[in-house]
Amino acid sequence: MISSNIKKEFNCNIEKLWSIITDNTQYAWRSDLSKIEIIDDKHFVEYAKNNFPTYFTITSKEYLKEYKFDIENTNIKGKWVGVLKKLENGNVRLDFTEEIETNNFIMKLLAKQYLKSMQKRYMRDLEKELQ
Image (cartoon, rainbow, N blue to C red; front, side, top):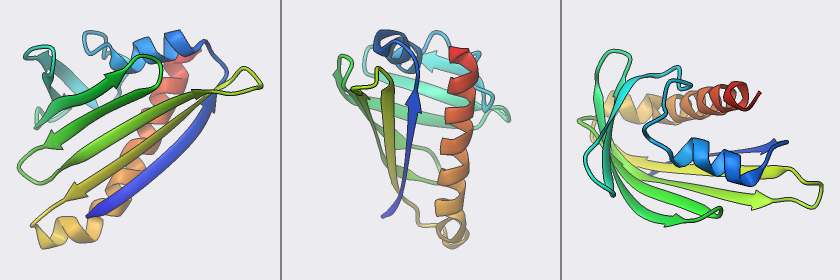
């Protein structure tokens, strides 16, 4: 299993941050996506800019605390965990961990770097959206 973690503090209201990351109907702030298709309460599909689909199944959604889902596309299979924590200084720490498996040898070589770059882009996009 290939794993990548990123943590970032945001100076914002925890409710607003939660709403942004969990509302799949509002995705224009994501620079990596062309669209999100919502299947039902637990399933959605993200389409990259090149329309490559990734399928998501929400496995946990604990209000203002934790958001988890399984991820799958033709190249990878894994899980994503997001944890929010309100800090004493009033900021909110967002802690994301993504773990994936792949059978593709080239993907195995590039996966860690790819995950890191995707996580950094997500955090940059999120920061822009919060401003």
